Amino acid sequence: MLFIWGFYSVGEIVKILNCIERRRLMSQTEQNLLEAFAGESQANRKYLAFAKKADQEGYPKAGKLFRAAAEAETVHAHAHLRALKGVKTTGENLKEAIAGETHEFKNMYPPMIETAKSEGNKAAERSFTYANAVEKVHADLYQKALDNLDNPEEVECYYVCAVCGYTCENEPPDTCPVCKANVKAFSKVE
Ligand code: FE2
Ligand code: FE2
Ligand code: FE2
Image 1 (tube, rainbow, N blue to C red):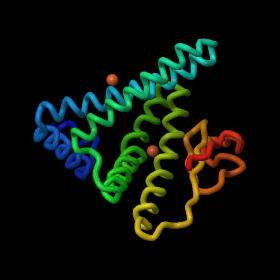
Image 2 (image 1 turned 90 degrees about the vertical axis):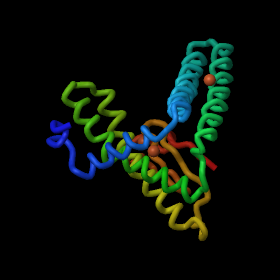
Image 3 (image 1 turned 60 degrees about the horizontal axis):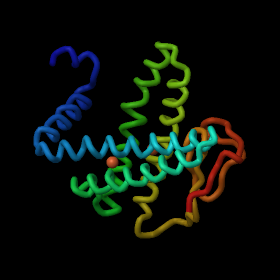
């Protein structure tokens, strides 16, 4: 235990201990649901990436199967999350989303970026750096949505950059502020 004092602040150690305590208070089935939710969620995203590759390689049937299975894994993931009582009111969900995004850009990605740099892994450094910048944007957008939950602001739609995930309201920029991609990289989310 003593060695971690040199690496973490007191606040961070308290958070880690809280996390361990929360896990200790969970039943075995709740821990299993958490693990299964993570696995099914990953399978969903992996199969969608495999489907895209199958289409590019000229195997549309394999692509369709990957997409069908991906959809089924989402059904499983959502059922596990509901069994965990992990979907609450929108106000609570926005608060949880802000906490998650904030953890990612404050605690999770910065050391990952440093490690990728020191190990010379350029692809990882780039994907961590893009994600880190965008999670901050997400935390801000969620905070704004929470602040205006009962008085919605004029947000018609969102745009997402296909290269880095940068997310913005109403109109895409000419050039992505995170990855410098052209406006064509943006797709609209209603
Ligand atoms: Fe599944
Ligand atoms: Fe995010
Ligand atoms: Fe981008």
